[in-house]
Amino acid sequence: MSMIFGVPLAVLSGQLLIGVINGAFYALLSLGLAVIFGLLKIINFAHGAMYMLGAMVTVIMFDVMGVNYWVALFMAPLLVGAVGVLIEYFLLRRIAGQDHIYSLLLTFGIALLMQGVLTNIYGVSGLRYSMPDLFKGGINLGFMFLPYYRAWVIGIALVVCFGTWFMIEKTKLGAYLRAGTEDAQLMQGFGINVPLLVSLTYGFGVALAAFAGVLAAPIYSVTPVMGSHILITVFAVVVIGGMGSISGAIITGILMGVVEGLTKTFYPPASSAVIFLVMVVVLMFRPAGLFGKEA
Amino acid sequence: MSQSFDSTAIHQAILEQQKADGRKKMLLNAVLVLLLVAAPFVLYPVFLMKILCFALFAVAFNLLFGFTGLLSFGHAAFLATGGYTTGYLLTNFSGLSTEMGILAGTAVATLLGLAFALLSIRRQGIYFAMVTLALAQLVFFFFVQSEFTGGEDGMHGIPRGHLLGMIDLNNNFNMYYFVLAVFLGCYLLVQRIVSSPYGQVLKSIKQNEPRAVSLGYNVNRYKVLAFVISAALAGLAGSMKSVVFQLASLNDAHWHMSGEVILMTLVGGMGTLLGPVVGATFVVNVEYHLSQGALRDWVDPILGGIFILVVLAFRSGFVGELQKFFKKNLG
Image 1: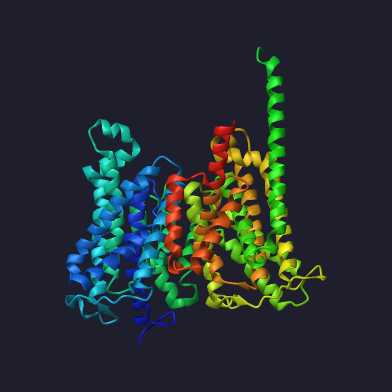
Image 2 (image 1 turned 120 degrees about the horizontal axis):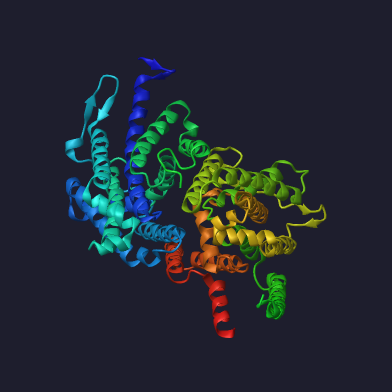
């Protein structure tokens, strides 16, 4: 077997693959955070809980109604997005204009509440969700084995990330959004319903998290606390990428997954901390993050 | 200058008012101290010590958040560092006195605070919160992986030892009065800091940082110092906590702990001196009583609900709302 730096090629590429997949999740989640932060200036501490809700809803819908994976892929983000719209309408809107820190604290409370309630109902041990039949098996690339489902996750995550970036940076709707957050009154004057736009943006951001949750359901263990573990890592990714930078969130997300995978191969004890280490180093030289603008 | 003739009279009146307020405050403080001294005869001393340790933690946090406007989401790191350091030293060096162990824990937390401050100080607002959170997470992973912390099990059997080589701290009453003395000392220190010219600068940074800069203050230096003092006091709280309970655990390093101290400060009233103490008392009691009763499993969601309620409707907290009420109704 061929070796690279004393590590078998198959092991290295296997870890790299896992890294890219984790990176795809980081990218989807940090993208949602960046959309919500960049446009609404809300640090969404409930983001991990929304990701968890997406996965839980997928499993529950399957158990209760037999809803299959493909339907869940649309339904779960839609449902969670609707929850997000309600949260924005009834809670977050009330503290608009206050110090941003209150939105952080409010969403933290929401996350605690949701996670706690679901833990009481479903416990913390993982729920099972089986892979759709289509994705059973995989392909042998010669140097490694690539399961179909993992290839699908990487592919669809990239498509969704690119689509979101395109929508916000290149379309008219995206332009309204950016303008509405710059000067809400002026946009109102042009006849744009800015409060609705804000609600929908928050809903869309958390729907992205829920979408990541559906993708995660067949490969990670689905538990009410799954979001709180990943959330802090994703925040670090957002800080490294530069808060509010859409493309920064996507690129850094995938990059950090790879960095984590490589660390796991060469020095496993540091693998859970390496992203935070990268963050410290980046902050020392570029306080605004890799893709962020100096504020 | 037409205003100059009555400005002295106004000044006089303000001074009188301040004196009267000061007397009222002194009286209130004296009553509270008396209550604290008498408390262990009525309530279980270990529970009271838990409240005092968390109250000190919250007071430390509030110096930074309430008075300087810096939201650190990583204060658990200092609590845990103080606790683990003190625990490790007292367990492994039997010659070391308890007070030296606590001082060492505080010192290490202080140094860590300096490192955090230097890394995070260049960012503001939410960015600052995120950076401190991530740094604290790094500390958490360090504690998870290190052998001396006992990993997930934590550090057990930390000896309480003797204070100054004479007073046996295994006696809960002795321990309580030691913790109370340290707490009151720190509380007075923070009170002194907040009312000093230095504290006035901190408040001005909170209210309008660009203006403070334009007045010629080296804002970053003030902020770093505030952060370091806050980290030191949080570390001291952790050190004492590990001696009181004779254990140090990962719980103290987890980011939920950083969230909890925010909740304590917010519920009690951030930016007030007494607020964090009231908030810590409230939260520790809620957690304790819920965990005893039928709602045992609902502590987290209920805390989450309190968080939401406080942010939406109650932003000044218990003490802040009371102060507003008195100002409005009693002049």
